Length: 215
Ligand code: DX5
Ligand code: ZN
Image (cartoon, rainbow, N blue to C red; front, side, top):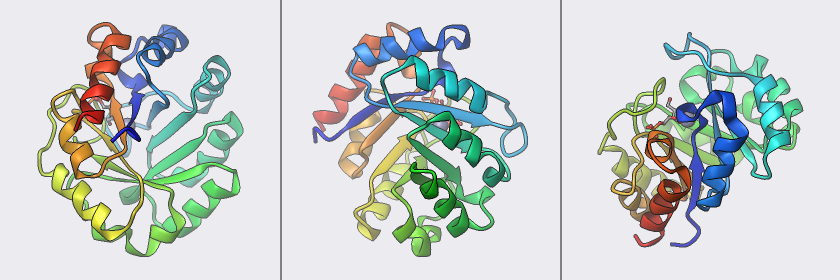
Protein backbone atom coordinates (compact mmCIF):
# COMPACT_ATOMS: atom_id res chain seq x y z
CA UNK A 1 0.00 0.00 0.00
CA UNK A 2 1.11 3.63 -0.35
CA UNK A 3 0.65 4.37 3.33
CA UNK A 4 4.10 2.81 3.72
CA UNK A 5 6.56 5.14 5.47
CA UNK A 6 10.34 4.82 5.26
CA UNK A 7 12.42 5.69 8.32
CA UNK A 8 16.23 5.67 8.31
CA UNK A 9 17.83 4.44 11.54
CA UNK A 10 20.62 6.79 12.58
CA UNK A 11 22.43 3.85 14.19
CA UNK A 12 24.19 3.11 10.90
CA UNK A 13 24.73 6.77 9.96
CA UNK A 14 27.88 8.86 10.46
CA UNK A 15 27.22 10.36 13.92
CA UNK A 16 29.51 13.31 13.16
CA UNK A 17 27.18 14.36 10.32
CA UNK A 18 23.75 13.34 11.51
CA UNK A 19 21.77 16.15 9.93
CA UNK A 20 23.36 15.52 6.51
CA UNK A 21 22.78 11.79 6.82
CA UNK A 22 19.10 12.31 7.60
CA UNK A 23 18.76 14.81 4.74
CA UNK A 24 20.23 12.24 2.32
CA UNK A 25 17.57 9.70 3.32
CA UNK A 26 14.87 12.38 3.17
CA UNK A 27 15.76 12.99 -0.49
CA UNK A 28 15.01 9.29 -0.99
CA UNK A 29 11.51 9.69 0.41
CA UNK A 30 12.03 9.14 4.16
CA UNK A 31 9.21 10.65 6.22
CA UNK A 32 10.45 9.85 9.73
CA UNK A 33 13.81 9.55 11.51
CA UNK A 34 14.32 6.51 13.75
CA UNK A 35 16.53 7.48 16.71
CA UNK A 36 18.00 4.49 18.56
CA UNK A 37 18.74 5.09 22.23
CA UNK A 38 20.82 2.41 24.00
CA UNK A 39 22.04 2.40 27.60
CA UNK A 40 24.50 -0.55 27.79
CA UNK A 41 22.14 -2.23 30.29
CA UNK A 42 19.02 -3.24 28.39
CA UNK A 43 21.26 -3.89 25.37
CA UNK A 44 25.05 -4.31 25.23
CA UNK A 45 25.63 -1.08 23.32
CA UNK A 46 25.61 2.64 24.00
CA UNK A 47 24.41 5.38 21.67
CA UNK A 48 23.05 8.87 22.16
CA UNK A 49 20.52 10.61 24.35
CA UNK A 50 18.18 13.59 24.62
CA UNK A 51 20.82 16.26 23.93
CA UNK A 52 21.60 14.81 20.51
CA UNK A 53 17.87 14.28 19.89
CA UNK A 54 17.21 17.98 20.63
CA UNK A 55 19.90 19.05 18.15
CA UNK A 56 18.58 16.70 15.48
CA UNK A 57 14.99 17.93 15.97
CA UNK A 58 16.28 21.45 15.23
CA UNK A 59 18.29 20.28 12.22
CA UNK A 60 15.66 18.30 10.30
CA UNK A 61 12.12 18.87 9.06
CA UNK A 62 11.30 15.22 9.62
CA UNK A 63 9.60 14.04 12.82
CA UNK A 64 11.99 12.18 15.13
CA UNK A 65 10.93 8.79 16.53
CA UNK A 66 12.87 7.78 19.67
CA UNK A 67 13.27 4.03 20.22
CA UNK A 68 14.29 3.61 23.86
CA UNK A 69 16.30 0.42 24.28
CA UNK A 70 16.97 1.22 27.91
CA UNK A 71 16.13 0.07 31.40
CA UNK A 72 13.93 2.37 33.45
CA UNK A 73 12.61 4.34 30.43
CA UNK A 74 10.40 6.56 32.63
CA UNK A 75 13.42 8.48 33.90
CA UNK A 76 14.43 9.48 30.34
CA UNK A 77 11.01 10.17 28.81
CA UNK A 78 10.62 13.76 30.10
CA UNK A 79 13.97 14.75 28.54
CA UNK A 80 12.95 13.30 25.17
CA UNK A 81 9.61 15.13 25.33
CA UNK A 82 11.55 18.32 26.11
CA UNK A 83 13.84 17.57 23.13
CA UNK A 84 10.84 17.79 20.83
CA UNK A 85 10.65 14.27 19.44
CA UNK A 86 7.35 13.29 17.82
CA UNK A 87 7.09 9.75 19.14
CA UNK A 88 8.67 7.57 21.81
CA UNK A 89 8.65 3.79 22.00
CA UNK A 90 9.67 1.72 25.02
CA UNK A 91 10.59 -1.94 25.12
CA UNK A 92 7.80 -3.80 26.88
CA UNK A 93 10.42 -6.01 28.59
CA UNK A 94 11.86 -2.91 30.32
CA UNK A 95 8.55 -1.23 31.21
CA UNK A 96 7.41 -2.49 34.61
CA UNK A 97 4.44 -0.10 34.76
CA UNK A 98 3.58 0.09 31.08
CA UNK A 99 0.28 1.89 31.49
CA UNK A 100 1.92 4.68 33.49
CA UNK A 101 4.76 4.88 30.96
CA UNK A 102 2.38 5.24 28.01
CA UNK A 103 0.39 7.92 29.86
CA UNK A 104 3.64 9.76 30.59
CA UNK A 105 4.60 9.77 26.89
CA UNK A 106 1.12 10.95 25.84
CA UNK A 107 1.08 13.66 28.52
CA UNK A 108 4.00 15.27 26.70
CA UNK A 109 2.10 15.37 23.40
CA UNK A 110 4.11 12.54 21.84
CA UNK A 111 2.82 9.40 20.21
CA UNK A 112 3.44 6.34 22.37
CA UNK A 113 4.82 3.09 21.03
CA UNK A 114 5.54 -0.32 22.50
CA UNK A 115 8.47 -2.34 21.14
CA UNK A 116 8.63 -6.13 21.32
CA UNK A 117 11.78 -8.25 21.31
CA UNK A 118 11.70 -11.14 18.81
CA UNK A 119 10.55 -13.78 21.34
CA UNK A 120 8.17 -11.52 23.26
CA UNK A 121 4.59 -12.64 22.58
CA UNK A 122 2.28 -10.01 21.04
CA UNK A 123 -0.45 -11.13 23.46
CA UNK A 124 1.47 -9.15 26.09
CA UNK A 125 0.09 -5.99 24.43
CA UNK A 126 -3.50 -6.86 25.29
CA UNK A 127 -4.47 -4.45 28.03
CA UNK A 128 -2.13 -1.76 26.74
CA UNK A 129 -3.70 -1.58 23.27
CA UNK A 130 -6.12 1.29 24.11
CA UNK A 131 -3.17 3.40 25.35
CA UNK A 132 -0.63 2.96 22.57
CA UNK A 133 -0.36 4.60 19.14
CA UNK A 134 1.89 2.07 17.44
CA UNK A 135 3.67 -1.24 17.95
CA UNK A 136 7.34 -1.65 17.07
CA UNK A 137 8.14 -5.22 16.05
CA UNK A 138 11.84 -5.97 16.43
CA UNK A 139 12.88 -8.34 13.65
CA UNK A 140 16.41 -8.70 15.09
CA UNK A 141 17.61 -8.73 18.69
CA UNK A 142 18.03 -5.08 19.70
CA UNK A 143 21.53 -3.70 20.16
CA UNK A 144 23.19 -3.59 16.78
CA UNK A 145 22.63 -2.76 13.16
CA UNK A 146 23.39 -5.10 10.30
CA UNK A 147 21.93 -8.31 11.75
CA UNK A 148 19.98 -10.92 9.85
CA UNK A 149 16.19 -10.62 9.61
CA UNK A 150 14.28 -13.16 11.76
CA UNK A 151 11.64 -14.58 9.36
CA UNK A 152 9.11 -15.61 12.06
CA UNK A 153 8.51 -11.90 12.68
CA UNK A 154 6.36 -11.71 9.53
CA UNK A 155 3.78 -13.88 11.27
CA UNK A 156 4.05 -11.78 14.42
CA UNK A 157 3.12 -8.64 12.46
CA UNK A 158 0.14 -10.49 10.98
CA UNK A 159 -0.95 -11.63 14.45
CA UNK A 160 -0.81 -8.08 15.86
CA UNK A 161 -2.85 -6.74 12.95
CA UNK A 162 -5.46 -9.43 13.67
CA UNK A 163 -5.59 -8.27 17.30
CA UNK A 164 -6.14 -4.56 16.53
CA UNK A 165 -5.92 -2.04 13.66
CA UNK A 166 -2.84 -0.50 15.28
CA UNK A 167 0.00 0.87 13.11
CA UNK A 168 3.00 -1.46 13.08
CA UNK A 169 6.59 -0.30 12.66
CA UNK A 170 9.21 -2.94 11.85
CA UNK A 171 12.87 -2.66 12.79
CA UNK A 172 15.78 -4.96 12.06
CA UNK A 173 17.11 -6.51 8.88
CA UNK A 174 14.71 -4.51 6.70
CA UNK A 175 15.86 -4.39 3.07
CA UNK A 176 14.17 -4.16 -0.32
CA UNK A 177 13.83 -7.97 -0.06
CA UNK A 178 12.27 -8.19 3.43
CA UNK A 179 10.19 -4.96 3.33
CA UNK A 180 7.48 -6.43 1.04
CA UNK A 181 6.99 -9.42 3.38
CA UNK A 182 6.41 -7.11 6.32
CA UNK A 183 4.10 -4.77 4.37
CA UNK A 184 2.01 -7.70 3.15
CA UNK A 185 1.68 -8.81 6.77
CA UNK A 186 0.39 -5.33 7.68
CA UNK A 187 3.43 -3.21 8.58
CA UNK A 188 3.25 0.50 7.84
CA UNK A 189 6.59 1.97 8.96
CA UNK A 190 9.82 0.46 7.61
CA UNK A 191 12.93 1.23 9.67
CA UNK A 192 16.23 0.54 7.95
CA UNK A 193 19.75 1.29 9.10
CA UNK A 194 22.50 -0.68 7.42
CA UNK A 195 20.49 -1.15 4.22
CA UNK A 196 20.17 2.65 3.85
CA UNK A 197 23.66 3.72 4.86
CA UNK A 198 25.65 0.98 3.12
CA UNK A 199 25.42 2.92 -0.13
CA UNK A 200 23.81 6.11 -1.44
CA UNK A 201 21.20 6.74 1.29
CA UNK A 202 18.69 8.45 -1.03
CA UNK A 203 18.78 5.63 -3.58
CA UNK A 204 18.72 2.87 -0.95
CA UNK A 205 15.87 4.49 1.02
CA UNK A 206 13.87 4.92 -2.18
CA UNK A 207 14.45 1.30 -3.16
CA UNK A 208 13.13 0.05 0.20
CA UNK A 209 10.05 2.32 0.17
CA UNK A 210 9.21 1.37 -3.42
CA UNK A 211 9.60 -2.34 -2.68
CA UNK A 212 7.25 -1.93 0.28
CA UNK A 213 4.68 0.05 -1.70
CA UNK A 214 4.73 -2.48 -4.52
CA UNK A 215 3.90 -5.32 -2.11
C1 DX5 B 1 18.64 -2.28 16.69
C2 DX5 B 1 17.96 -0.99 16.33
C3 DX5 B 1 17.65 -0.82 14.89
C4 DX5 B 1 18.86 -0.90 13.97
C5 DX5 B 1 18.44 -1.65 12.78
O1 DX5 B 1 18.66 -2.39 18.08
O2 DX5 B 1 16.72 -0.86 17.04
O3 DX5 B 1 16.93 0.39 14.68
O4 DX5 B 1 19.36 0.34 13.57
O5 DX5 B 1 19.53 -1.81 11.94
P1 DX5 B 1 19.41 -2.65 10.58
O6 DX5 B 1 18.41 -1.96 9.72
O7 DX5 B 1 20.80 -2.60 10.05
O8 DX5 B 1 18.98 -4.03 10.98
ZN1 ZN C 1 15.42 0.83 16.54
